[in-house]
Amino acid sequence: MVVIMSLAKYFVISYGILFSVLSTNTIAAECSAVFPDVIATHGNGVGNSQINFGYNAHLLNNPDTELSTRRVSHNSGSNINSCVGANCTASNTSAETTSVNFRRGGGTIDVNPGFNETVTFGTTSVNYYDQVNANSQATLNFSDGHDVYFFERLALGFNNTLNLAAGKTYYLNSFSMGSSNKINVIGSGTAIVYVNSSVNFSSSTTINSTGENVSGDTSKLVMHINGNTTFSSRSTYSGALYANDLNFNSPSYLYGVASGQNVTLASNSTLTYDNNVFNADFGEVCESSANSVTAIANFKFDETQYDDVAGEIKDSIGTFHSRAKSAQPVDGKACRALDLSATGTADYAIIDNNVLDGKKEFSISLWEKTAKTGNQSFLSGATSGSNNELIMWFTRDTSFSPHLQNSANGSLPISSIAGDQWRHLVLTHGDNKSCLFIDKVAQGCITQATNTLDIEV
Image (tube, rainbow, N blue to C red; front, side):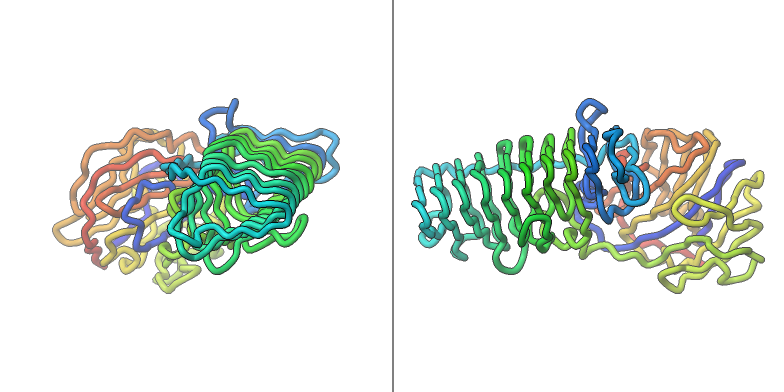
């Protein structure tokens, strides 16, 4: 039996379950946590984790109006909202951070493409270069002979064309450019670019984009820049971008997702969310879940009434329809919710045991609202001889002690789940670890063996 329950006097829950074969590294930053919005910040405090909107700067197609950042500020003279339908607000938490192991090739070969000259790198056994300085209107290509390219310095001139080969990785210790450049990604797959310096994308430069303020295929480019990044006027970027401070000058454009520390969008700059970016190969930047996570059950509690009848709680994406016991649907956060505010354990929901039975690695996502600071459980699964086959057990509001197969392995100190306000909890299990996230913030992991669950009816 799988039971949704709470020992809190005032508790309302909206509930969803995801099961999948997870990455072998369950504590690696998921791309959706590094890039939760079209623009997010990853600093560790308000001073280095904020977004500033200039006059009429705005976001399009973002999943919601709450951004993963510590502070959002606006130009008081703007006459349009920074998010669609409302001004963007701050979640008061930062997005996940990430780092890469930058590699240097130690090249000694210099290349200086002349005016209007076309140069192709990698046509010999050499894939590591020292100083590359391109003159005006030069075109730079890459051969299929190497999977990785190294540059100590890559300097583009005026009106250059840089054709990155898709499916390759590029390490640029220093990257600079003149104005009016075109950076394209050629072929099938993703170009992954690691830069070990600040970058200024000069005016009228298009990066994986077919024109000014025109999107390219956002799954074809991922950049990790270990420095500050500036987009000069009329520049356009399509893809995923992780950097330190980000400055979008007036006006400049981005399609896809980005994360920085202090972020400034100058007048009329526009950033457009495109979830196609999560089909990219993110390399070392983050752990992509595009092909590894599949939702198998989602309970929104959006029915009008429950009568203790089998199948009355509908699974909106599958067939694991379930049953309420002395509990009714009410208004929730992301959707409707289940009212479990009665004293004791008389009110609960019985979830189809097949949701968990036979699973080894899984994620459970839910919204909860409780004022209780004492011990409580949100989910319980049992079998004969193992009453605690799986329990999301909190010994108090700041301590999490998950049980698997009748065994716990200590407690994890966490931020409070109480306060009588909505909080988003995610429990993941795999690779012999159980990890908890609260409102997108990782709380840590506890070592627990990954074995097949046995949940009985």
